[in-house]
Amino acid sequence: MHQDIEKVLIDEQVIQKRLVVLAEKVATDFEGKPMVVVALLKGAILFMADLLRKVPLPMEIECVNVASYHGGTTSSGEVTFLDQSLPDVSGKVVLLLDDILDTGRTLDAVKTKLNELGAAEVKTCVLLAKDIERAVFKEADYTGFVIGDEFVVGYGLDYQGRYRNLPYVGILKENAI
Image (cartoon, rainbow, N blue to C red; front, side):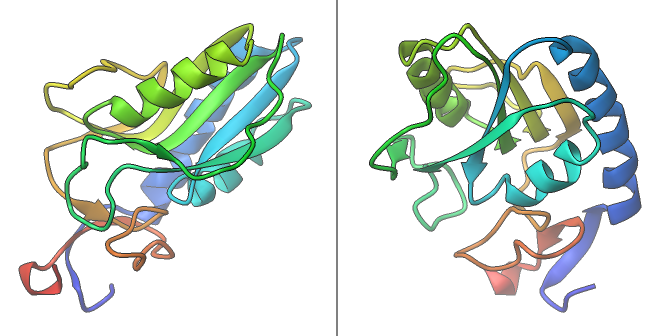
């Protein structure tokens, strides 16, 4: 365990077992459809890589770079698209991947944009969903784990750009924030 981590919330083995279950659901729901996976950078990159290796379907993989935390430990409430261009999803079924669902603003903004770009359908998949009242987007189509209202890092989630590479989800010590 990293010295800045107070507690491991979800260990690597538990994450990997849950990804098998999510992959089976995705494979069943998307079989025979022109699938495009859109992962939100940078947080969903580890989740995307591990999950999609378990989904035995042909797919396109795209990434969209958005920001909502802007360096803090809570969502700023503003979603910023950092890319100049967005993927071609016209007429395709999209699986939108994100690391965490908290206020719902990010998933709502990106799903709305993908629908505006002509996606036939957009399903959402998150590694974590905080058990809180959401501002907009209520629930993902696929959720790995429901957690409390805690600031977590690891497995793609960061604090000021650090801790993404931890193989588990953990809670930072107070003095590390």
